[in-house]
Length: 404
Image 1 (cartoon, rainbow, N blue to C red):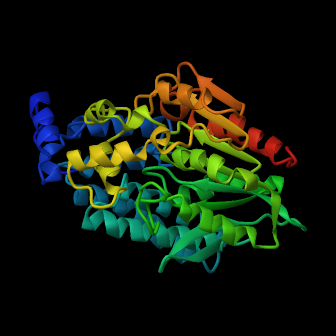
Image 2 (image 1 turned 180 degrees about the horizontal axis):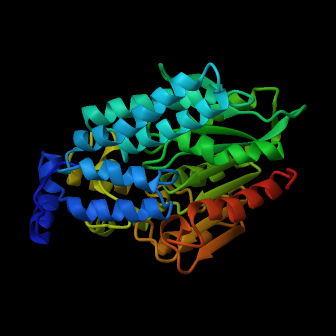
């Protein structure tokens, strides 16, 4: 984050109305540096998003180096630890590939947090590139190795990760779509446990994020349709057992695909999907001070739309994104599980209610009355717990895969 003086609400309101060109001038940081340090450490201590997998003592080290909210300084501090793990992994490759694999994963985690939530500075972009390289090095050491798919698309390419189980015959598949600040690497790691059940996964960056070739706009789901076309042409995939998962903004895309790709999908999971009210002007104004999100919520939101540099432009782009406005909610959908938290401050429960009460297709729901975004809590219903106890069992049943 840039080191910006906290603005009073009146200044924020004026910026919203005027659409000031300098995005940094109109967005106050959600937390001071000390507040950010305290919250990040607290999340690391309980292994909470977005610091899942980072070691509390190393988080303390990286935070201790920070003296400002400068984005490049942020990237540099976390990258020091990422480089440490990357160097260790390289040295271990010839003699201890299993240990090297673990250290490449840790390198990826630290480089990825260095670029979090989006690589919107030169230092963060360099960290993102290092995160990609570390993850690919990890993927080569998996059994079977991670396959990088490159699908031609509108003069560019869709890059996705395919993980196939060691099982004969066509296998079921889950297409996992990243969210606003997660990436296809996160999706590939999350769905790796499905391999033991004979289920393949295909992880991809959502439009507007990571290495996606297009930004968010009505019709951008064509990118995901093209990817489905490519993977379903593979003889290893059982075309009759295909599911889609998306969390947060990824849930937005999985909800769209539940309607647009209903004929090809056996099941869809939408976890805290933004539907309609999320994209309202009132929710954008609340987003400026949202503390459920660690930091840079609005800049991250700006990054996924084409040509958006001001809050006024973001307001207009978000309005066009509404699934209600686009007419998806009244269309028949594939069988769906909707996961959410009543206390979510990013995707209001009203959006979940609207989705569940729309159209003609029955839907399953897992709603945590004490849960925040993604249905998560500080303890108990954490991200890993929800995946292990809710998401994965439901998908295995829907895909008629063997459960442990």
